[in-house]
Each structure stands twice: as C-alpha cells, then as structure tokens.
Length: 93
Image 1 (tube, helix red, strand yellow):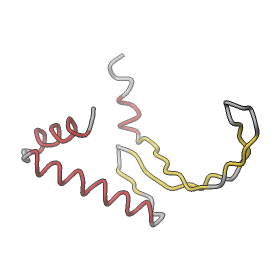
Image 2 (cartoon, one colour):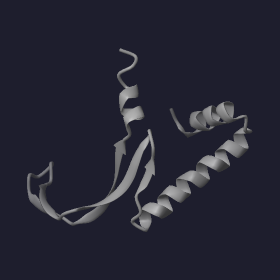
Image 3 (cartoon, one colour):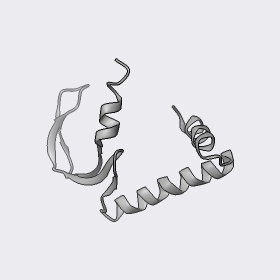
C-alpha cells in the first residue's frame, strides 16, 4: 500500500474527503517526526511504538573492495509492533 492508497483507505473508513484525510495523514507524520527528533517515544496501543536508539560506531567493509571502513555512531528510529499488529500477520494462514 502506498501513500495514496492509505489516504483513500482513511477517507473511506472515516467518512472524510480525500483532501482532509491527506492533511490528517501529513499532520500525523509531521507530529511523529517532531516527537522523534526531540527524543520522545510514541506509543500507539495495539499498533506499536516508535523510539530513537543510539547505534554505536563500528567497523564495516566496503563490499566492492573488501577494505575496512569506519561507520560513525548515529541515532536510528526503531519500531516495535504491538500485540494486535504482530498477531494480524498470522490470521490469514
């Protein structure tokens, strides 16, 4: 599902226009991004949680040359699926 299909699904499920659903989705994505930039954790019960974690510096390899390279430390966004979402992948089997 791409963004346009998600907007259509939101519009159909909530009786909003596609334009309103698009603005709502954009606003949600923006709010999540701002919260993560501040280092906050976002928890949506049943869906999952987003958090920011620090990844330590490490040595890696250039796959073309095999030469070792230094990979610097950075912050990464992590997502952990909630129980409702995690269980939904197995229901069709």
